[in-house]
Amino acid sequence: MLAILKTVALFVLAALCELGGAYLIWQWQREGKARLWAVLGIVALFLYGMIQTAQSLTFGRAFAAYGGIFIIAATLWGWWVDGRVPDRFDWLGATLCVLGAAVIVWAPRGGS
Image (cartoon, rainbow, N blue to C red; front, side, top):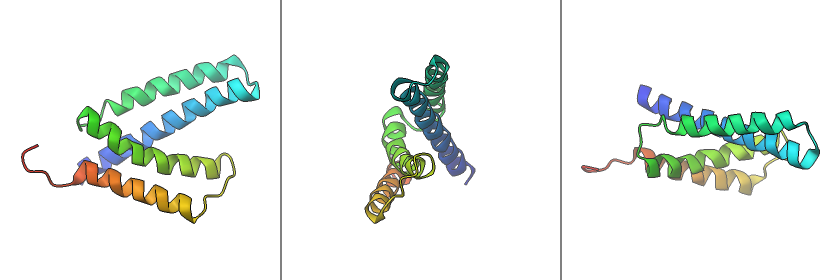
């Protein structure tokens, strides 16, 4: 159970760093925020990469499974930060992606 919590926590932290970093750079580039926003965004994106490499999964599985987590995190980010309320199709798509990520990470495998 602890391994599952660690995997999920790392995915959530990675998503926050990736979304936060991209958002900071977006704000600098598109909204005219100070250059510091871009620098902080670059730092956050670097941290995202470091967090992803802390996964115990292989590279391909870690990034494939992370895609599902990123989609749900981006859906929530859009709702909480940008004020765009997800509709039922947003939730359906995000749920399918998270289920797919769970299969990639935790499906029983014989010998691999």
